[in-house]
Amino acid sequence: ARVPPNDEVQASAQVRLQRSLGCTKTYVTDDGEFDGEDMAASFNLAARAAGLQVLATQSFVPKAADYTSFAATVAQSGANCVLISADTESNAVPVTKQIAAALPNARIFGSAGLAESTYTEPEQGGIPDAIDPRVLITVATLGPNLLPPAGRRFLAAYRSRYGTPQPYAIYGYEAMSLMLDAIARATDRGTSTARRSKVVAAIFATRHRQSVLGAYSIDRNGDTTLSRYGVYKVVEGRLTFWKPIDA
Image (cartoon, rainbow, N blue to C red):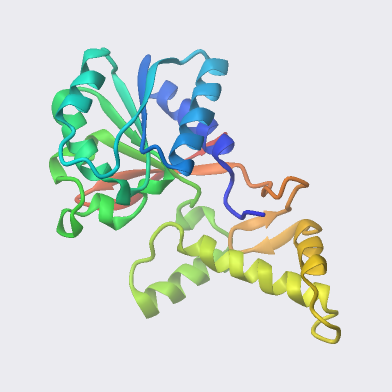
């Protein structure tokens, strides 16, 4: 089971975002890892259904020393938008830099794996500030004003104790909260033996849970019923919530 919306939801949100910003020819890149390839495949399906042209999908080598030829291939396609479906640790920063140099007028879109300070902040090895205005990242976390009071309290408490939270901090908190609640339900609030099968059943029986994310249920596939994604800009190296987008 998972608390954030799955890649099908993210892909639909990405397609809607790109179409709203005038993308007509998108080049999809991924890091060849499971999550990156899965999101790229989901995006292709969503783009085809929505009539957004995908020129090609190509994986890059995560630990390559240089991506000049890779970026040149992307540029030769004539793309006006590029999706990078990857984790930061897969060398997404140099890939982004060289694609940005090869396609100086293209918009660059990142999947949720890039929604972290190590990708956005130059001081942590992230992309240079000059690229910031061209980059948009989709991540399941919404802005504080769109969260319920419990979510805003969590963010305030986290910030007070640890500093600015990464976008997925609230999902880590909610995942553990759901697990503890499922254990409590599966053990009659701690009065009976904890059995894994009962805990799993309790998670899948989650309905209309009131949480820091808002109300949600877990469906039979283990997915959340939440379906909104946040769109983040990069402003002076910091992820900045821009707007929500529905899948």
